[in-house]
Amino acid sequence: MEDRFPVAKRAMWSGFAADDIMMSPLQRFWSKGRFALSRRLRRPVPGRFQPYIYTLPDRYPWLFRFARSALSDVPAPRLLSFGCSTGDELASLRHVFPQANIRGLDIAPSAIAGCRARFACDDRVSVAVAASTAGEPDESYDAVFCLAVLCHGDLTVSRARRSDPLFPFANFERAVADLARCVRPGGYLFIHTSNFRFCDTATAPLFETVLEAQPEQIAADLLYDRNNCLLEAMRYYPVGFRKRVS
Ligand SMILES: C[S@@+](CC[C@H](N)C(=O)[O-])C[C@H]1O[C@@H](n2cnc3c(N)ncnc32)[C@H](O)[C@@H]1O
Image (cartoon, rainbow, N blue to C red; front, top):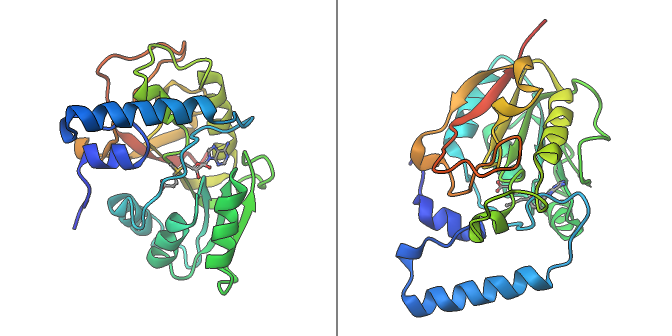
C-alpha cells in the first residue's frame, strides 16, 4: 500500500489546515474556534518549530523504502530522527532497518518519555530531549530524517502571508545547516513537510537531490521564500538529498 491517508486527512491529523471539504459548516466553525483558542493558550517554547506532536506508524513508507535501498550496502546504518515525537518514526525505522543504530531527538520531554518506555528493550535505540542537533558529532550519521518538523501548523491554519515572526527563514536555514553537518559524505538528509525549500538554503549546494515526493505525498503546508513571504500556490517536491563527497 503506497499511502493510506488522503492529503486532506493527513493535513488535519497533523494539526495543519483541516481541509474544508471534509467538514460541515458547524464542524468547521467548531474546529476553527477550538483551534484558535488552543493557539492563543499555548505557551511559546524557545527553539521549537512544529508545536504539534502528531505522528503515525509507517507514515512515509515510500520514503523509508527509498532510504533502505539507498543504504543497502551499509550493514548497520546510523540513523537520526530529528523530531521523533512519541516514537512511531523510530519504530518505522527499526522495522525497515533491523540492524541500525537509531537516535531520536525531540524538544518535547513527554514525547521522549514515551520513546524511552517504548524502546527500553532495544539497546540500539537512544533518545534525548533536544531542540537542535548541536550535540551530535560531525558526519556521524548515514541518514538524518527531519519529517514534519521544520514547519509550523499555525501558519497553514491562519493562511499567514508571512512566516515570521512564528517561523523565520533564518531559523530554518540554521537548523538545516546543522542537520547537514551531522550527515557523513555520501549520506542522506531527508526533509519532508517543511515551510521552506531546501534549495533556498546555503547548505543546498553541498547536496544533490535524490528523491522527490509525488503530489499526493506532500502535506497541505504553506511555503515561504527566504524573505518569509508566502509563495502562492507553490509546491516543492524534493525531499531526499545526498551529501556530495568532495
Ligand atoms: C508533527 S511531529 C512529527 C513527528 C514525526 N517526525 C513524524 O513525521 O511523524 C513534529 C515533532 O517535532 C518536534 N519538534 C518541534 N520543534 C523541535 C525542535 N526544535 N527540536 C526537536 N524537535 C522538535 C515536536 O515536538 C514534534 O514531536
